[in-house]
Amino acid sequence: MDTHQALTLLESQIRVTSQQVMVAKGHIVNHFRPDTSEVIQSLLKAMEATAPDKLVIHLTVGTEESIKSLAQTLSWTLAGCEAIWGLISSGLLFPASSDLRSFLPNVSWTTVVQGSGSTGGLRLDHFSLLVPNSIQLPPSISRGERQTLSDHDLFLHALEIPTIDREVEESLREAVCCFKHELFLSCLTMLGRASEGAWIELGLKLCSITPSTATINAKKIREKLEDPFVGIGKKIQETAQLYQRTDIFENIHKSSGVKPQDLNNAIVWADAVRESRNSVHYGAESSMPNTYEKIAALLIGAVPHFRLLYRIRGAAT
Image 1 (cartoon, rainbow, N blue to C red):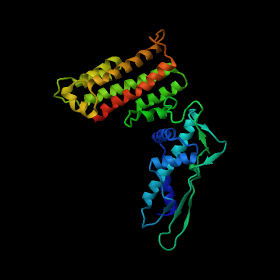
Image 2: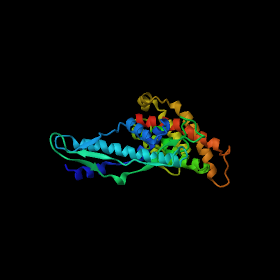
Image 3: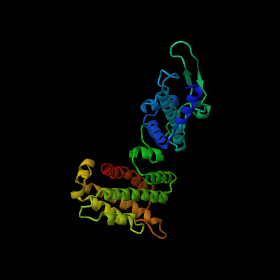
């Protein structure tokens, strides 16, 4: 492998995902440091993404493994830089310096293992990102306090559900964005959509593992869950009643640690979201005004209830 091939392989493996940015934001907030260089190094250490100081290109060493490790380092470095700007955009961090620091990857390489060879550096200028030299927490945020409702990535990071359904995740992201801009009715609409998705997907999962010999018509329940003309209240009821069948799901009750009665609070929360969301209809009013405090409580309340539903999903896999 020559240097051109090494550079091509390295660039092909550098990838930054939204999941990485989400994790980086959580780490930066929970392990805050004012110096951005220390921030990035702390993130790389936490993600076990520290690469060797020099890339050795030689037939006698594992060059491809070294390139893979280096790509991880560069990917997490870029994710950390993006996370810093994302938190600044959300008002959760402030630049503490007008000077910008370039996190230009400086990749040295060598072909020297024993005897003669050559050394040099790989040019990765197009991966360079500028961030402030130093950052600080806003005066309104005390050190260490988690502001999960100000940034959708932090909210999903707090949720800690790696297997969350794509549409449920998208709905929660939009709900937090709407809340941040005080679009409370829009926030409720997306929160309600996320709740519906979580309940329906749980019900469909339970239907899929119900034995054909069971004294219950899982096919009929599935049809109700997939019917767009059946209200979500009925779908939640069908899912909860199905989960109550100890004769079918006793093993899942034990492995998940979620008893059938444990779903009652999740049902109450889902009903509160649905009732508040129904004020979207013209002329309709919620029994309680959709204030900042009310919507914040519903968003915060979503965390334990979504974790509960997905814990059952995980046990049913």
